[in-house]
Length: 219
View 1 (cartoon, rainbow, N blue to C red):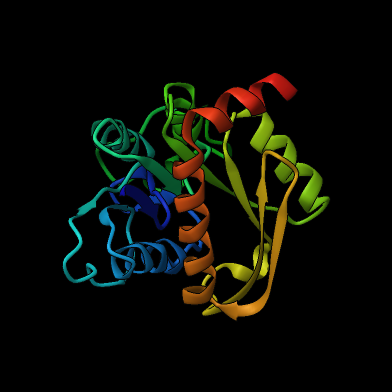
View 2 (tube, one colour; view 1 turned 30 degrees about the horizontal axis):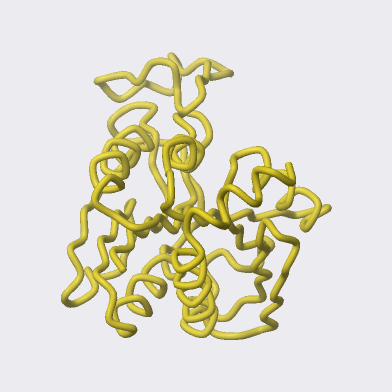
């Protein structure tokens, strides 16, 4: 299996020293890449800014912004059997980024924002027999919101967790499939969760076009 994995946050510049971002450490995405490699798969990793070293033996492409991550994903998705979108991509970016540091006295009280590309939805739209697994970090109505996101974006599976997962080495996650199946993994290391996600990817790829046509028929 040729699997494309994304990890970490993105940073959206306000000026050369300020940016919009989040607290994603990248550990989950890196763990997924390592787990897939251990199981004998060919892995490509696209990572936003993290403090983690590139995993040994895995081609790793470093990006900063959501637009850069989108370009990298679109470039590598064609030659992949599927995508696991573990990155925490910023939904918005400043409409204009200053080339010079904005002085405090000149800083506006509000910043105009525009939407970033929806990377996982774009990939799912043209996936064919490839699988696309997304993530949903929710602070309320977690399962309902995750299921809605999976259906709306036509993902094959989604991994739901809450804000306690950010930066943590252990986490609780639920893997939800389009056919209604769910697997909850309680308070395990991210390596353990990563193994379960890779096994899910293997199953989705094996089911291929049959799964795709059947799930669309139920929508």
